[in-house]
Length: 124
Image (cartoon, rainbow, N blue to C red):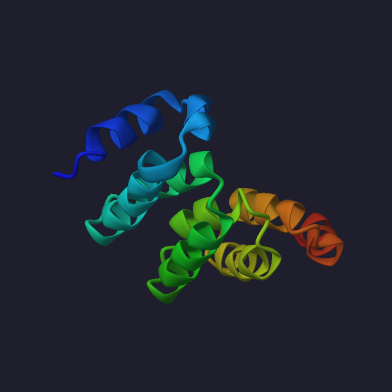
């Protein structure tokens, strides 16, 4: 366990916005925890921590890795905070194909894809 893991877990559990005040080595340690959580399979924790840290690029990378693994709902969670339009549109299509029109709609709304929102309204 790293010296920042307990702090990272506490911040994620509380969804603590005071994380924005973290700087220097503490912030770097927390960013490393994002990567460590993800590698160890604590994907939701990694996504939440990256979101709290405002790490849009890390969220994007995690999202695309989750797309490769066909973990659509987790990829949606990773893409949502950063409004990753390409990823959200991809996930929206996959979720729609699987019958999850609610989450697909949220993905298309976040991606501002009016064409697909209209398609859902007309066909479902």
